[in-house]
Length: 392
Image 1: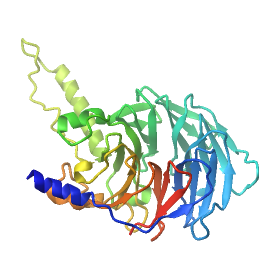
Image 2: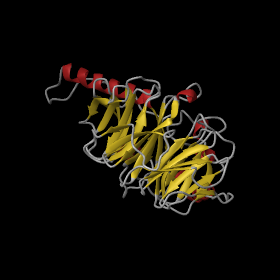
Image 3: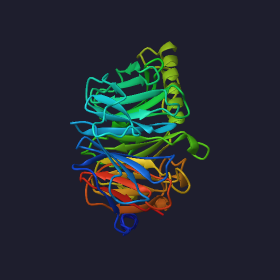
Image 4: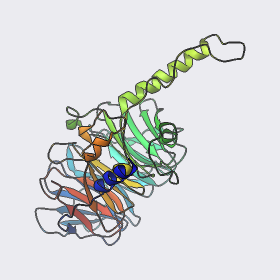
C-alpha cells in the first residue's frame, strides 16, 4: 500500500515542460505584485521593490509601455479602481496613493494619499462598488477607507495577534471582508460594526484532523483569494488559503460561519444547562457535529514542499475552474479543484486534481491570471523580470 501511494505521489509531482515564458522588462529590483485588466485585454500592471509600477500591453513588445516611479520604498500591493481602470491604488510602506494613468508625467503626484496605517501595509483591496478600500498591515490591523469621502471609515483590530498578511472583500456580502495572518487565523469581519468572526484557526486544524502538513513550519496564512462576482453562479462561496506549511486549503465560508455560530449557541446552551455533581455538563450536544468540509491540497497530492506565497482563481477558459498557487519551493501548481468542490478528504482516486506542475527559477512573490487563451499566467518573483506563461 505504501509503495502504491509513493507511486501516485511521484506521478502527481511530475513536472510538465512548458515553452520558455515571455519575459517582461521594466523593473530594476524584485517584482512584488501583478494585476490584470478586465476592461483592456492584454494589459497588466506590476510593482516592485524598486518603488516602480510598470504597465505592459502583451499584444505589443515585452518592455513596459509606461513606467511610474511612485515611491522611494518598495511597492507592496496594487489594485485597480473597479469601473475605472485608469485609476490605480498603490501601497508603499505605511501609505496608500491613488494615481490616474491618463495624467502621465515624469513626476507622478498622487490624486489621493492615505496614511492611516501605523505599520507597513502588506495588501490592499478595493470592493466591487468602488466605495471602500481595505489595507492589511504588520500590526495585525485592517484599515477600511471610504474612498468616496476620502476618509477613514473603520479600523478592524483585536482580531489578529500577529501580522495581517492578506485581505479581500467578499463579493456576496456588501459589508464583509476576510483577512488572514501570521497567527494562522482566518477572520471574517462585518466592517460596518468592526466585529471579527473567527472562521478557522489553521494552527489547530491539522492536529485534530490528522491531515498531512509540515510539522516544522507553522500554518501561517500568506495569501487568500476569493472568486470574483461573475464566478459565483458556478462556484460556491469559497475562500482559498495559502499556508506556510505548504498546504492550500479551499473552504466554504458559509459552512464555516454556520459551524462557528452553531458552536457558539451550543456553548451558551451548555452554560445554561444543569450540571452533575462532578461539574460535568449533562448535555448530549457534540460541539464537533457540524464538521466543516475543506479541500486540503498538500504534498501527498503533489503539492508544495515549502511555504505557499501566492494564489489566484483562474480567469481564463471556464472561469474559476483552476486555482493556481506559487511557493518558496520555486514551483507553481495548477489545481483542478472545481471537480471536487464538496471534498472534505480526498480519496486515492483524486490525484488528478493536480492539473499542472511548473518549475520556475525563483521563489514566487505574487501571481495573477488573465482572461486570454494564451499569456494567461503572470508571475512576479524574486527577480526583476516578470514571467508570462500560457496555461491551456
